[in-house]
Length: 190
Image (cartoon, rainbow, N blue to C red; front, side, top):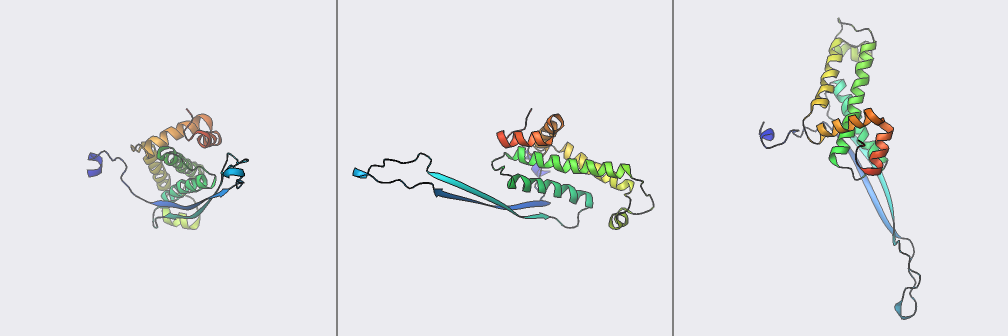
């Protein structure tokens, strides 16, 4: 509540992290030759070649969360990893977190569709059915819908507004075209 009074809508609650290392190596392409009078007769105008390499070293997720929340966090963090590995380096927080939230939301929608398409068992508990790989209970569907609603109704500028802008773009243009636009411009297409 103190955070909300100070204008912070999304209080930090770290549930997952994507750790990565990036190495940038600069090398001289061609050493200039010194001519008479210390003149440089054939100096090239592109003095450096940058080699970038990024490795995702870990995805960490808080232990003990419900399966559906863990899955959505994993989808979110895997999108961070994919962005790093594909060379998306200088995105604003709103664009990066927004597209990651879109992936978490898409995963939850897929889980709701899977639960809805199967026969549910009202007698087995959610934990038992999850461990046995069996049918999901109506509780699982409600829980997935709750987590999906949390993403949709988040009021934070970064996660909430980023999700809504990214989701609109994905609905209008599809995920591949949206990602290509982000790669080229660093923004969502509108």
